[in-house]
Image (tube, rainbow, N blue to C red; front, top):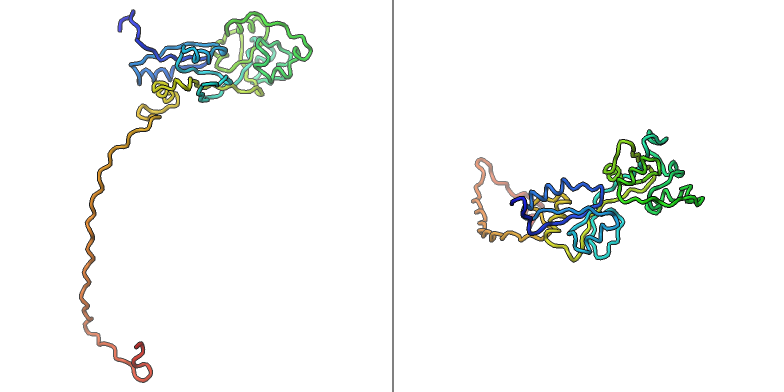
Length: 254
């Protein structure tokens, strides 16, 4: 295929920031060289819209999502971390709690981190100020580095938008998030089934579709077994037959 030509069809996979597709795309390329993969990175607000609008066959989503008309397979959990300026007083801590962050300004919708929302001082006293314009994760990380506030992200997202002037520390009592694979129920094609198999680690030979059983050979006819012939009785040599007893014992058994 020359540099200007494009494949007739792509198997398009959508994914939210933080999801790494390398291991699955490599297996797919080996297994399905006839159907190259296309990729669409989506913000969490669009992670299921791309399926309903037909922009992707499958989507790696971050739960929870509206699962109407969708099939969803949960895959793995992600640790929540807080992103802090490098000089922050908690920057050297191994982990923190939401109570440690109660006095911070969260650069996110508080409902996205309900554990923080329930203890936050700025919400309790009504001093929470309006959020600045934040379009991307890079924008948020830059504001954190400038000391404007903090973010609490899944660890993979914090790693994606990492900088030298910020640090990420686990939040021990915040809920983990979960990555899942989603697709339209009515779009459960053979290609989608095969991709599900790749994600789940099934081998190329395994399949969700029932396989035809090989035709069994007819059972072999069993020949009737002949009973062994009885051996003729041969009295032992040198042993006289017993004599019948006398008196009352004679004739017993008649």
